[in-house]
Image (cartoon, rainbow, N blue to C red; front, side, top):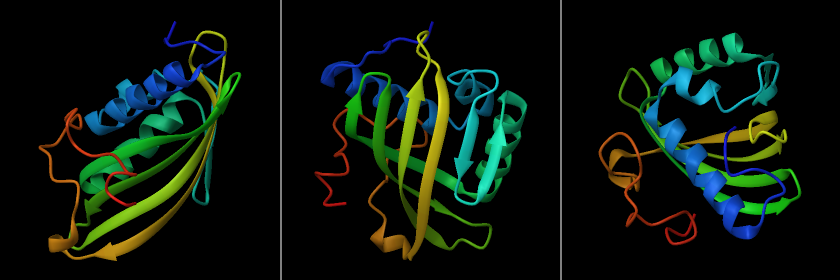
Amino acid sequence: MRPPLPPFTMATAVQKVRVAEDAWNSRDPQRVALAYTPDCPWRNRDQFLAGHDAIVAFLRAKWEREQEYRLIKELWAHDGSRIAVRFAYEWHDADGRWFRSYGNENWDFADDGRMRRRIASINDLAISEEDRLFRWPLGTRPADHPGLSELGL
């Protein structure tokens, strides 16, 4: 079981989004993969994959490429077993160039609270180091750090 479980209320949907954000900010592919059903299909940008092994391999490659990764997710909408999220994350490449990536995710959950489908659309914007907004130490975003709406994103 991966609480909170569907059907989601506003409070449990917000909680589910924060749990997902915290897992992704751990940058631990195995931890993140446990939140998905074993055969969960993903669409991430132009990539299509399914299952824990593919998710773990995808995330390992992602976080090798996207260094100093810091993510903020925000609930957009929810209904029954579905949650829509908007997000932004900052990272730099191997050459030290910084980016802010913006996107939306559509999630559908199984009764046990694991995600059974994930669809993500993402765009990257080159930013300067000085334009970064996500400056907490790597890992979980501090509770007092502003969210996307508070940052005007």
